[in-house]
Image (cartoon, rainbow, N blue to C red; front, top):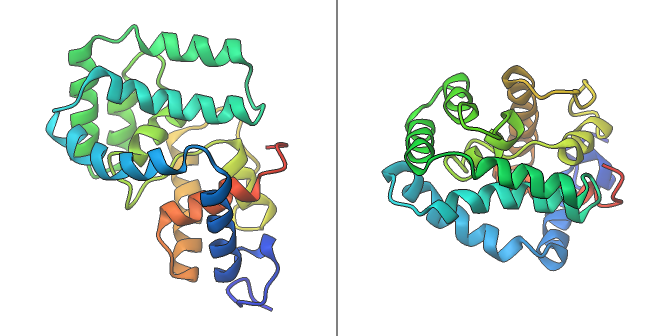
Length: 200
């Protein structure tokens, strides 16, 4: 069977598997509803610069609190990361997010965002999920490992995520999305759910 066959098993990321994993995500993931709201409201706000500091802080919190909830980081690590982001001035955050929203090139998008204190490429990927939700999704070990274990991405999760590594991850997510006829956010949610044993 091919990975796109509706009867393929769940780890093959078939269309049926992606849909079932996405439905499970909607039932079980506490961030589901707020993510849906923010995917609608944050892209135009970030593009225009008409957003509050808390909107930007929410993205950082979303990224780290999801990982804390599944045991990928400690609560101390989460708080430290969130506090580092608060060192940025509001004007710098607006400039970075507007620049990333306006840019089309991944390198420029990441460069704009990683100029901020406490933002590496992985955290930048979270921001890009809410500036370009049609093309970008967040990257982390749980999602990456789900792709790797499904033979959709050859490399294991890197010690440090570079823009090039993030680009490879996005290519793999895009390839799955094209094959199963679903958008990248749907595939992302399926990947998160697929890693639901808490080991990623």
